[in-house]
Length: 312
Ligand code: GLU
Image (cartoon, rainbow, N blue to C red; front, side, top):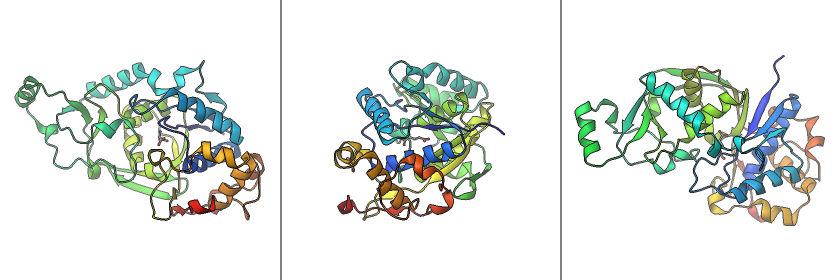
């Protein structure tokens, strides 16, 4: 039987919030239950938004919580941070370019966000972009006027089907959301390329992450296949949302580990989160290891899980 290799891939753009912790806990439980290896990868490709102090804090929070990783990012292993992996992205970009799949796009919309994983409502749909069919002459004219392009991949009109470990069979035609940016005009590689290259290159065969990234999965499966790799199995987890149905976000400073660590012991926090996720019958303190025996995805809702901040 193949060994499971899974990963945590936080973006150090802020402290972990309670939703990130819930997903990290599920990733750890899913991996340990299968006897797999867990890698910590820092997704810090967007230098403007990420800080190394957050990376240190995130690594420390995972240890504190009792969900350690087997290998990955630390001060002696910068190769597990996307900021150190540009050469790999260069190679992948060249491979796709040589296959004739990459073209320059001169539209400015969506550029800024392309480096980060899309949040709900930010899924880029390629409405109205004509850059795929520009002639060489039109491209030249745009270049001469000083426009620097971002780089998009042209996706085929193809249905990608996969079985998500929690949501079951999913089919998506790549042409529906259309071509997407793999490199911004400032040279920064986009989330979709970086994450695909990393999962492939690190031998990841199991990905657990939030449901908000389900819409990126078909793109990543296709990219990995185009790059000559085998896509991992994916298992998406429901999101914790506030009473007004807003997804937790580092951007809003939602209940962060800083606040939670001041208030709870690791077991108290794990107990409360496990109860919220449906993994425990009460919110009594419990350790992640103690949750392992009875862990099953069947206990977890497929809908977003509402969370009342007043109860924390
Ligand atoms: N770095 C992404 C985030 O923190 C996760 C990407 C992934 O798991 O594919 O939202």
